[in-house]
Length: 373
Image (cartoon, rainbow, N blue to C red):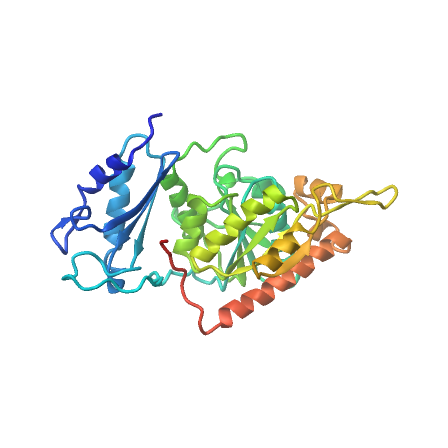
């Protein structure tokens, strides 16, 4: 596949006019920060701060124009008001200050949404998300769990759910439920061995539908299991719904922690509070002799949390029972709630719920915002 070029992006955007000003966004100098990586395109549209809502249609038109370029896999356009928009009569640029995005619509009935994320795959993020959701339900909360990993959905198996969700009106889906948690996943709608060969816009649309076209009902918290990395799914959720906060999952070794930092910095850039870091597969206890082996090192996440001034939420061991119960669709918090590992999940869940209350009660809290640097 041929690499998409910056000139192709500029040429496509020349066809998009700002109707209010009667010229193309390129002619008006509104486009900045074009980034192309593996045919995934991102750019910013410079506007005046008070025009954010009015310019949403223009943002969508710009995305569609670039999506039409052959070879483009995904497009992310953001509105930014870091400086006075071009064409403002020659006024001096304002100091570069991050501007709040328009208020993000909430999900009806959902009190708070929390993202569980990781910088890379294979760190046990989904296992952690499932057990945290079940732990929150065990504490008496009304909990939902959204599987936002379109390419690798694992919630159906981990929550022991099969079949397709019911739709009473052909428009809204009823979430499936087990272990006291309401669940939604693309894995309910396609076969387990069916690959999702979708471009970025289709992924973002699917996530939007699973958020807004599902009858979640009254929830104290909706846990969102994000895919690894910092791509379309993470940006879609961070930009379009008011997350109360995010939890980062990592293993202790340096390579995983490097990627965990990237995930954390992404949430900082879109002004989503990071509740803290969980160290998964933190250590291994031999069941025969009781010796502790630090297979993936130990304590790295705690050190990183201290360095970046965020909370260390807890450490979860590498243990065969956690793996077996997850594969069987019987999360350890539900199947063996008195085990020491289940109690660790419950302790972390209690910390996260306290963080949610703190975040929602903060008078300075505002909608997520996009910062262009």
